[in-house]
Image (cartoon, rainbow, N blue to C red; front, side, top):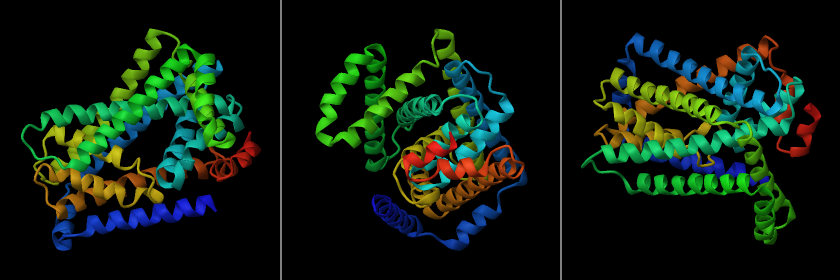
Amino acid sequence: MKRVLQGVIGVALSLGLLWLSFRGVDWEAAYATMARVPWWVYVAYVAQLYATYFFRTWRWQLQVEKLTGRSLPFGDAFAICSVSFAGTFLLPFRLGEFIRPVLISAAGYGRKSAALATVALERVVDGLVMTGVLGITLMLLGNREVPAIIEVGGYLALLVFGGAMAVFVAAYRWRDLSLRFWRAVLSPLGTRISEKLLGMLDAFIEGLKSLPTLRDVLVYMGLTLAYWLLNGLGMWILAYGMNLGVPVEGGFFALACLVVGITIPAGPGNVGNFEYAIQVALKVFGVSMSDGFAYAIWTHLTQTLHMLLTAAVFLVAGKVSFRAVKVATRSDDEDRDEAA
């Protein structure tokens, strides 16, 4: 019942944001904007998507090996990540986040808890990096008028991810004391909720163990920055190809707004919040709602097709188990144990 209610709310939110995205769109103008994208933009953008997959996979592979002490071939890691990235983006409730932990366990490379710890660390670090990018690009905008929703969203994201990082690092330094403290603080929420939240805290602590030395931290952050740098440049390349007149920092600003926007738990595939977040971001640079909608649809469609096709290759080829993915994406946590 809880999942059904969440699903209804998510779909309703998606429809509402889609309605906001559709308002004032000149469909002929939007189509003309998409039609004038030159062929080389397709090649450059898709190449950028695969490059970001490469760096994200490499980062995760190193984490898993540090935590489990076992070698994880890059090809296997790439296959698992490709399916997981698609699931996380397209499925509701971010159920795709459980794909990597379950597949790692099913393939015999380590415990689910270890892989879940790497995912927990990724989410917080990526969130902090993107809120940092949003803050930097806001400073570079000069006198441009920025909608209040972007500034508020950025501050809220910084509060959430920055607060989470502070709590998690303190918990890593003083683990037992922190767990006792948060167990007492969360106890009024009930045993089930408090234990889930404490489990997330414990997972992040485990994730930090994958970076035992300063060198490991620097490599991890270097791969993280490379991934986001390519992502931001890809966003700008598309705007350049569409002749939208958006500067380089505009690509990173649109990316940061998009990342904040898709953290909102909307319907499957981030439909609605994806489009609206990009439109609002590009409007700061004088891009019309029609051109912004064309850009958002082109980006959303290209990313979705890329994810689906890449994941399908590994699923059809048998590199990733259909059954394990099905178990990983069930809404009942206990069901996921079947794949372990």
